[in-house]
Length: 251
Image (cartoon, rainbow, N blue to C red; front, side, top):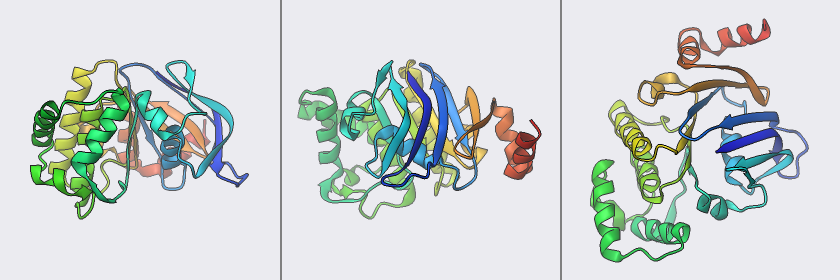
C-alpha cells in the first residue's frame, strides 16, 4: 500500500531537513499510529505524503501501490486513493459544501455522479456523522465549529472512498461525544473497505480507545525511533514522552 523509503524533506528552499532518512511501510488493511511531542515532524509527514507545495523532498521516495507519487500533485495523489483529514481544515468562501463534495467526487471517479444518487448518498452520510443537512449549503468550513470541521472531513472520506487515509490530529478540539462519532464512522468505513489502511498522527492516546492500531511508532529527531503495539501508547499515557525518551536513549 504505502511505502516510505529513506525520506528526507524540508520546507521549500531550506536545506535543514525536518524528516531525516524516514522509513515506514503500511500494508493493506493495517492501522498505524505516529506519536511524538510537538516539533518532531508529525504534521510535516502528512503534508509531504499529500504533496503540499510548501515542502520539498530532498532524498528518498514515497510509493503508493508500488508506484512513486513524488511527481504527482495533490489532486493526482487523491485520485490514486490518498486522503488527508487535516488538523485545521481550509475555509473556502463562496463554495458550498455540497458543490465541493460533488466536484471532488466527479474528479476522483472521472465520471459525473447522478444528482439524485448524490443527494441520497449525502443525506445518509450527513446522518451518519451527525451533521445537520443545512450545512450542505454553507460555504466549505465557514463558521463551522472545530467538531463540525472534523465531522465534515470524515463526511468527505466516506464520500470519496480513499484507500489510504491519514488522520492528522483528528482528536484535536473534539469533545468525547464527537470523537466517538467520527471514530465510529471510520471503523464502519474500514469494515466495509477491508483493503483500506489508516495512518493516525496524534499527541495523545485517547483516540486509540476507539481506533485500535496494529503498530505504534514514536517519532523523534525526524525518524522513527521505536515501534510497538498499543502498549507503547499506554506507556506514553502513563510516563509521558520524557519516559519514552529515556527508554530510547538506553537502547
